Length: 128
Ligand code: SF4
Ligand code: SF4
View 1 (tube, rainbow, N blue to C red):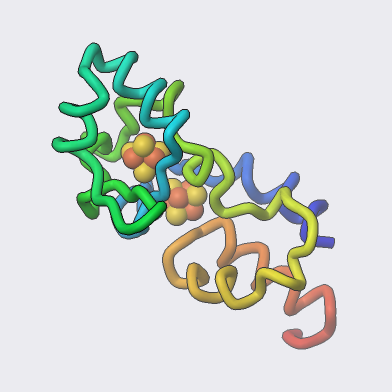
View 2 (cartoon, rainbow, N blue to C red; view 1 turned 90 degrees about the vertical axis):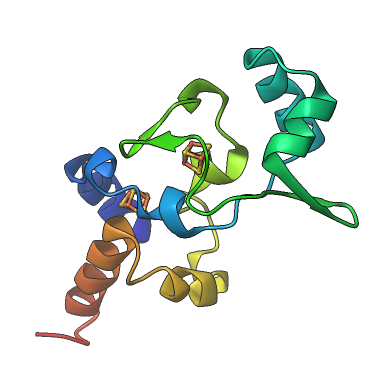
């Protein structure tokens, strides 16, 4: 049901007039992604890391909310955006029922999640 709703609802949402995920989420960054984006930006990894990343143990995160690469609600590094950006809101991924906590965490933030959840309520008889 979620997959079907996602196919119908996502194309109807204009993410460029929302951008709430880019404005409010902490973005995970991998070594490979940082390598690729620093290359794209013509920066050394050291400069890129100093300018954009926060590190904690093995984790790397973008150091700014909203994301530094969001300008006028458009991602300026779209082709090199991170896996977390590509996946969000993950309605196309399996195991929706194991991701309910994170899904509902974003219910007020993401129009795609909001509309899918509201349709699910109707389809399951929870809401008439
Ligand atoms: S990299 Fe682009 S898509 Fe990802 S959070 Fe930043 S602005 Fe948004
Ligand atoms: S929060 Fe959801 S609807 Fe808004 S831009 Fe991100 S994915 Fe699109």
